[in-house]
Image (cartoon, rainbow, N blue to C red; front, side, top):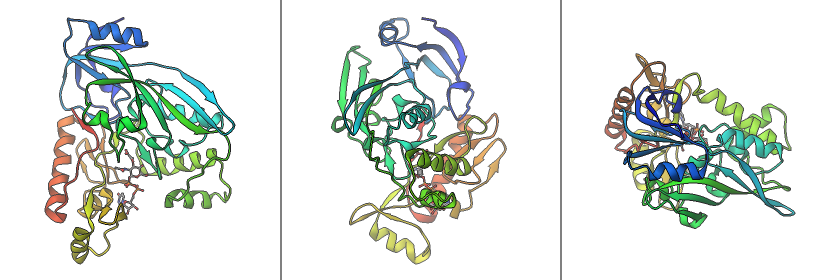
Length: 337
Ligand code: EPU
């Protein structure tokens, strides 16, 4: 194993923030991971996956452990379904493309989401009407303190909107090693209810879409709205879409009759944070090296050498403005470190 000193984390986070790690090691096997965790010289460890859902605001005074476990395996195939196990360090989008190539259906709507397989369950990634939980069978995770491996079922993970047990009760306690997905091999359930997908397919004159068509439609929509982290640093949606009561919505509608909302339950609705942010004038705003993306107000961007603190301060300004104008609390979706 190669423990390096004073390494810049810029290439390891999609926001492209240049902070330094005291120590850094990339681990390629579970055994190596267990050995690193036993090292007494580095009491503080910081687990890094794809770095796609974090805003780094300071240097990391710890041993940064880059989980680089690779490999995809078909573990069981029946007439209509397949269980596929992918290791945590596999790039998410490449895994989606691998599944499509094999005609395994279920995650095509989650195409082009940045990050790795191992971090996908932590925030229950979701897009265009599908969430990771819909195809999740189980995952194996390493308990950092004891070094033992535990299997988590879907129920154990307590998935919710952009949420799981790994973001809550078990935060910082486990490293996800691999994820097993239950996918379809025939009679795929094609999900095109999310407006933008239907429109995109229609534009291309496709009326009986395959999983590949859906993936291509999602790639096309995402590429037109969301900045490519390789070109402009970002972490996807910076905030969660807030959930408010219908009573509160009725009050807001008196001043903002055009406010969009989606029913969640009898009493609750979800409001697109992008609309709120656009409505108060932040969409496309640029402050020096950072700002709010011009095509999707939910995405904060680093145009060059912005610091994590710059972006954090912008996010606070947006939160305060939304609170003042709408009396709604915007919660960050990304982890602020
Ligand atoms: N909207 C605006 N202005 C904007 C952006 C959005 O008014 O600048 C309003 C519009 O009313 C639009 C609605 O918001 O119809 C929904 O917009 P969009 O379809 O772009 O979805 P979103 O709610 O902004 C969520 C996810 C995205 C995911 C899309 C598609 C969250 C926090 N974000 O965004 O996820 O790709 O739906 O399913 O739930 C991510 O998590 O990083 C991410 C990109």
